[in-house]
Length: 179
Image 1 (cartoon, rainbow, N blue to C red):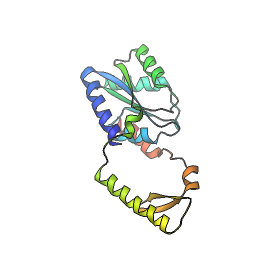
Image 2 (cartoon, rainbow, N blue to C red):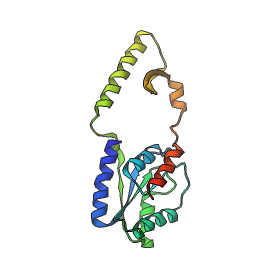
Image 3 (cartoon, rainbow, N blue to C red):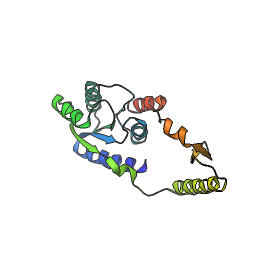
Image 4 (cartoon, rainbow, N blue to C red):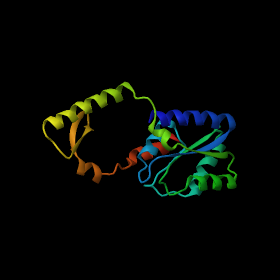
C-alpha cells in the first residue's frame, strides 16, 4: 500500500500543478479491495470497483464538481476490474470538457514493489516460525495467516475458496472523505 500511496502522492502533485484530473488504475481484477484502501489513504475524489455499478457520466459529474468547487486536481482510483475501462473513461471525460484535462496512469506491477517496513519484517519472521512449527508438527494442507494479532494455521481449502470482499463501510468512507 505504501508504494501505491507514494505513486498517487506524486501524481497528485503533478495533477495540482497542471490542474488535471488523473484516473489511476490499480490491480484488482475481480475485487476492489486495493482500490478502496488506496482511495481512503490517498484522498481520491472517487473510487471505481467491480462490486459497485457506476456510469462514466457519474464519474464525469464528480470530476466536474471538483473543478467547480475550485480544486486544483481530481484523483479517480479505478480497480482494473471495474465496470469502466480506464482508457474509455479518460476519453469520455475529456470529450465532455468538465474543466480538467484528464490523464491516466496504470500502476501495474509497481504496486508489488517497495521496501518492507519494520512491521512487515516482523510479521514475515513470525509467519516463518509458525511455518516451521507446521513442518515439525507434520501439518499438511495449511498455510500461516494473520488472524487478529495471532499467527494461525489456515487450511489451504479455506484460502482458495475465499475472496476478499470490499468492506462497504470503507467504500462509503471514500465518498464521505471526498466531499
